[in-house]
Length: 633
Image (cartoon, rainbow, N blue to C red):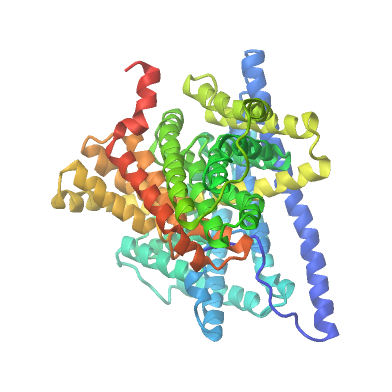
């Protein structure tokens, strides 16, 4: 899988004219980058300021801002859609490149052209769908005093910009400059042939099967996951007329802008500010003092620091990247193999999506209409169990392979000093969970408080960065948050078709005919999720599988919060397994270690995490016990 933060560059065209054209295109796109990136960053800043001001007004002056929620949702729409063109340029869209990358050169070029056609066609459909909804929607948002159509106004603009980036990307990268314009031309032709002229029709076909087939084909061609889902929803509409383009756009916007989901950009931003401020180094130093003396010390530090980092980030991908940059070189220097160093970094990076504030659990809470506080509380002990399982596994691997320790046992005074340095960061995690669990703040409010807290610590207390670094950090966080928001929005029409076609009910009946024993059903759904997790990003998998599986397990009396933890833990294992294995690919790519070697070194670590999964699955008290203890049950 690739979440392309780095362009895949080819050979630049020969000749001064081509070089001059490429330079001109790069300058133009660079200017667009600055303009769009500035707009996205300002939208994120406005989002933070409005929600934080509302929190201060609510708790400090007992006078909240009536229009804050609506303004925040509208601003998040702007962040999501304005960032799409930037993601085209920086290749930050999440996609699976495994199948395409294995093709011969000529076949790969054809597959990549087909993927670009899908992107172009989907963008054109969103463009016209956005224009239609702007024309159709009426009324005024009384809280903001603005016409309702303003909420959707940036969607056509973003689509046009996305097509511009797609058209010029080949020239910018010096690789197949003809592909983007040809893809757009063919995408326009496909739109008119199928949607306008009706020369090709699949009306009457099964929408569910058509959507599934379209999604799989688009994914195998390397299309971004979000675009593959939107494309599949559009094709399903051609078969069954379930969701016209304007309805797809409206579903996307409504799905991505629930107030609960605004916590996602806040926690992503908080984690980015903590990293930029060097606060994660304090966590790693504390981890060294705690477990650095143990057998396999550096690997143990890797695991424990991931658990500590989980309390401020909630993002496994950022933890995998950070751990690879900071810890893998040190591990290799001290005698660990590069493959094992990457494997333990990827395996321990599963923890931040289980221990709160987990972004995966936020997505699941929105998909299953569950309490974020209950899910986050339920994730604490399972996350600790995963850490403990990995630490035991590391101990035995270190003994077998002869890995040593990282340093001498730290004294009590050193540990307390390291704890004191890390306390401002650790305290934030406790405040977030406690504040949400006891109803003091909502997840969104906790997220914006975490942003301000991280900003104050990094910029004013520790003076780790200035305004330029702050702007760059906020811009990167905005694009990353937008990609998560786009994926959530794309899943909304996809899920609508699934529910309309009664696929969850069909799955429930099918499994029920096999067994009504909860133990066996949990085993079957675990196997199903492991299979999906091998091919899908965890966010997409949660959004697709939760509406399918949650009704099934709750009908058997299984607690939905407990099963929610099972879903997230299970799907995180998919980030460690071929063929997709996003976490393994991140660590292998950054450290330049062959990913097949990382997968091979991952086997015992996967066994440890799978053991933890089975305990979490069949011992509900692991997930629910802390909640029972706090509530006095």
